[in-house]
Image (cartoon, rainbow, N blue to C red; front, side):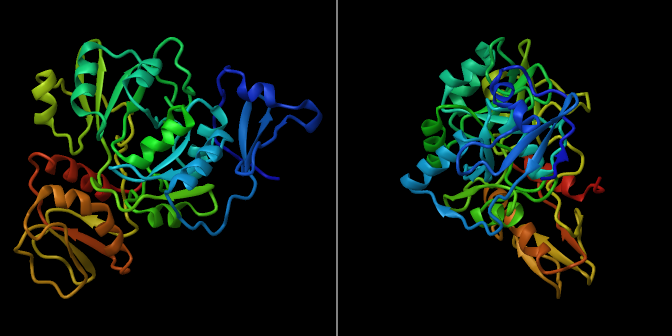
Length: 372
């Protein structure tokens, strides 16, 4: 049974992993439960994730009560479950389990320095994870449940794996506004670490089939709760020492945030403090070209508004009525649709940068960046 190194030199000292190591079995950690399609091996001072056999053909399961119960058992056994939120489909794992969180990084091919968001059932659970200032509580009271992630100092006794925080002294927390996500967290009674359910750096999934296609053979289950209504990842703000900084724009806009907490501080560092801050991200296979007035013959056209350039190739319109909310909901699905045509590139017409347009343009800029 071979393994691929995740590069993690330390898995924390909460004891769950250490106590399950059996020296009579060569230092292997045995999977527990029918969904545990993995093991961890200790080699010297580091741990490796050793793949066993997740389902090769991954069919989404309708997210009814029985499926949510089975998904919760999977998560409690250390498995990975893709589940719907209002933003995008998330790849969920028990955030308190080092080995389960390590599986997320392995399944996605995600850099270990890129932190994860812990999804919670409400403010009470959030208080167990991080230090919520009055400003943080005001934002949570206004926008939770909803597409807002708060990056706050980790509490001294935070049960979430340090892997999920990428070694930082902060933690990213969100309460999703989706009945399936809320039911799953409520059933597990633990925070769920959940980045988008897709290979790292690629277009985010807004349907269950997107998640199943991208991660088949790597995860254990996909809950199908229908298409995501928001379609863009959450807005992320840092609230440390009463400074509020916008780390990732989303559908909760800059103006909405400032209506609660006042003017936002500028983020001047390039340090990765939260998901969505990598230069290249959300990328289709085809190259992406922005603010185009005349697409090339070998490009597909991604347009916005009623007046599109003449083009004989594949065309998708984010919103014929120039509605930014509609455009946000369609963005990732239409990038996938045009990518599937086999076009050499995707030409994108200009999109206003005000309001939600800031978030749409952020995703497109990262999709167009050179792939690393």
